[in-house]
Image (cartoon, rainbow over all chains, first blue to last red; front, side, top):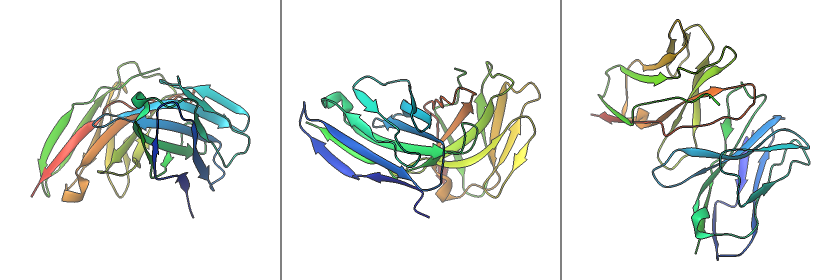
Length: 112
Length: 109
């Protein structure tokens, strides 16, 4: 089982560039979410989805867009990268909100 | 959204039991209590969860207070590999899973 796969593992962007962080899961999980983790800090929820076609905002949604066209994929788009978005991004999935989350290995993003 | 409160850090010696506390005084009747841990440079991993009764698995035990306003993650014999940040979170019906800053556990040989 691949579990939750995030690509790329590392990315460097210049201020103002856009990019998409990819997240895919092969466990048929309805629930998927994106977190960011700044150095020495806890995880903060960016966006989440409870099924295909349904997304909602988390704690820190500004500057990020998401869509959920399939059960398997939940991409995170940075519209215009800023240095404040330098962070490690984790994608997670589970069957339902009460079930244990499965996390990907993260994407380390640096914005210069 | 219900919040949790955990100590910033705790220390233990190897092979000793560790009790990691979590306060969640605003927990609702349908909130589950989940624990995750994050090893250095890795994503979080699930440890254990419960609703009302105490729970055991191969990794740890979860003791839930009778009023459910607090819980304790118990590592029966700490090892160096247990050094990590431990997060206690509540999973509500809104599916908005909020992590706090967690407890950093140091284990000394």
